[in-house]
Length: 489
Image 1 (spheres, rainbow, N blue to C red):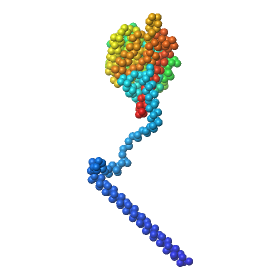
Image 2: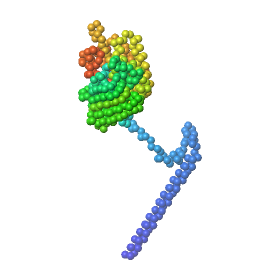
Image 3: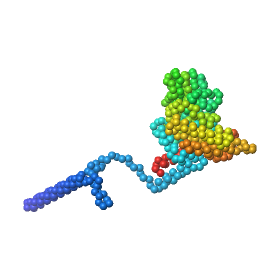
Image 4: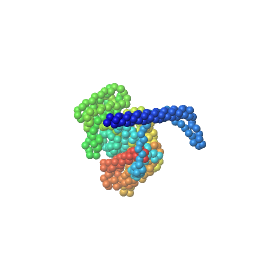
């Protein structure tokens, strides 16, 4: 029994010594491997140091050796922008198809936009600024000038709503202190010591050596005056224009104090006083959106406009000028106009004119004369508002009675074509009411359908909404095209 135990102990001791020898052997093997790796790294390092930087030519190939600093610090490289995932073939084909459809909708057909040099990126800078305004809490303005076709905020109310649906924003925009034509979107009243100063129109308007402001008409107050603004409940008006969250007043103060009090429909009062002369603005940010405000003034100043905005994004100002042909902008003082545009942050100017010259055109020379005057206006607007995009909206079809029948004015088609070539050759985009409504003879059909009045010149409210939405479609299609191009299609 004792012998068996002794033999077992000897066997266990032998196994233990074998395990120890194996571990020692493995340890020596690991040490040899580590030593070999260290020698390799040392040799490679020496080679990399002495290896020529330009490499060694071997036939047509050149052998180069990486430097140790690059090898050892490769995992410490500065992070780079993660590349966008590549589109699959099917995704790219779908996007390409969408691009072509969008391009066709924006740049073909009767309601298309014509762009200078067929530059599809013409409006890109405007779209980019509009997106930035929406994101950084500011407001980018579109000034929409036109003749009596846009009175009452017709056409423009639809264009405004479309742009604000794309970029955000609200409110009716900039208004005259004393607006004497009714509007679809706001009700106004005014009283007190005020005199109209205008670059156009007859009595009781007066001329003022260029001091008209960006609406080409301002109101000079000399003493106390009050103006009231109230959002309408008209079904034609979008809900976006029925609230005011930011109120501004743009004016040119004469020497002396100007006291201003703004009262909203909640009874909140905001008072300010200004002594410094010159073009400037006052601004009030309301805690709660208002639907009506009163502006009470006392002093000696020229009020260029009261601005009623809501939220951030895009604002569109309707500047309707009855009887105007669009050649009056140079009558406004350049320094005052430039300062006003800068304060308003104008990104796009739309000019809808031409209809008022149609009845008086006698020959093609008259068309050329009118177009040459427009070229002067384009240059002037660019000089006072550098970087602004310009869009000219040409006149609608208009009818006159010849031999007992209503037909298109004989020289109107030539005027439309010449306006388009004039605009495009001077870096101005063009949109045609005439083509969008159907071209020659379409006004008769529009009157028959209730889309235009029986003067065979002006749209009805219904017709104005159709045209406004068509122009809104044109802008939206261009914006979709802009978005698809940014995706790299």
